[in-house]
Image (cartoon, rainbow, N blue to C red; front, side, top):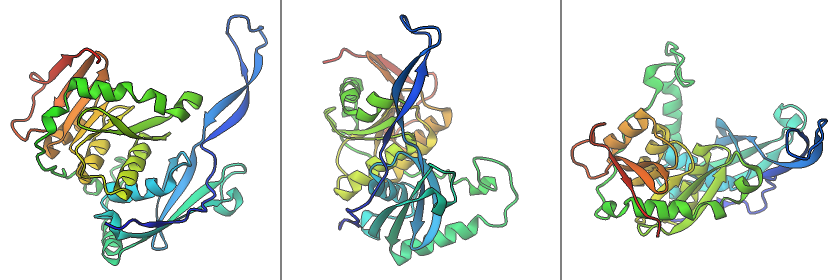
Length: 307
């Protein structure tokens, strides 16, 4: 699978920024407060443009934009493989040029994609036109909600993604969450082997964006089919499950609780789903074995000792 060409000269914005703040309430701080510098996570509008047609604007941390764009296109079904992307160009757009408030620049990511992918994208956009509004999730009708499950092939290694393995990988995440350590408010999506070795981690203010960055990075390296699983520093929603399933990722673990729809989507997709993974405990919500769906009465809860 060939890699999409990227513009290595991209002038992306910094992912963190410094701000003067006044702190109150700490021991030893005067009643009038104390001036300090604080580090904040950047959050900028990112326009994703396919073959010259703007498709979506996402709020994201301006880092790893080419991986983000590729991962978004794959996890949203715009592209079938990374080879369907012929090139990616990233540029910063001045606030005045973008029509944004002063001091709020944006980023435009131009993707050149295959004719087949672009025609499918245009058909999808046309199918949303003219429907009666229902006010759900920003789409115009229930029919606009694409919730069809994406079946994941059965993996013969799936039972190796057990609680000790999951907790081993989670324990390795904090030292690699460098942006979150400085600014907080930043999610992480990580990739681990079936032995629990953490190999990749991406950060973003948006949990969906962090996952798209991870997917894009793995796709560029032709690693999406490797045995392994995704870890998220967030809750487990149906969108995250479906993004993983769409690109063939068979297991996911989240540090917080899942939603009921997230669990149901995992069951329908055949994806192994761990949640509430806080050592020494974790909850197995969907086993990924392709057998009977786990009911609420039989959902497995387990504890494990850290290695």
